Image 1 (cartoon, rainbow, N blue to C red):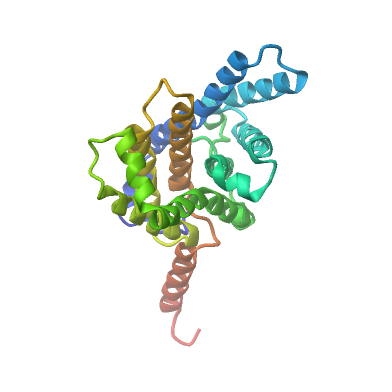
Image 2 (image 1 turned 90 degrees about the vertical axis):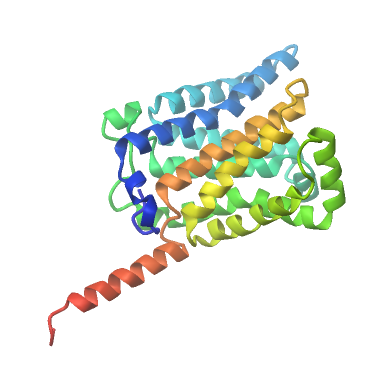
Length: 284
């Protein structure tokens, strides 16, 4: 776990092996649901899958099994991150305009979550945990910094994009809300704008990171439950599983912390340096 981020009242949770083990098990399960959906979709929609499709199915199935068991988890996290990033090519052909008008931003957020799974390990309720390979290794913190910063950027892009989009197209968003769940008050769109801008910026800069993470993880559960629960619609089902997978990634971010390239880490280092200075003997 990242000791550089703020701990405050999260400290009892972070120090509880039982809680953190259960949390990270839940995170692993949440992150595999979208791949089960993708495999099912490929099997149903493809009449005679090509060799490449079978390879993709096999890679995703292997990743699912390893992540659920928590065995060779870092390898599995990179494997599934590669699978989800590869899907960007099929969705948008790496064209930025197509990227913005598809659900590729959510794929990017899930890939960011797998980077945090790679950094933190699967937790104590896992095969790796039983074998003593379930948590971050000593001395990795600084080397993980750029990776975790990349993960944070990946994870918040989708929120910032849709938060700004809601500001620019509020009327269209309210029409979407009415169409998908007329019982939800339309003024909640303004709360959604705040949630999709302020907490993502907290996570992006690594300031009070776990507070931002808790809010975003909750949003990833509430939003699809309200607006993407039309399970007869394939697109809505995909959004539902994507949002839950992003939530799983945020749980790994909660467990790991933002990493050394963050305001939280800088504040912790400054506080530790001040404390050490105060403990030095006079004249040292």
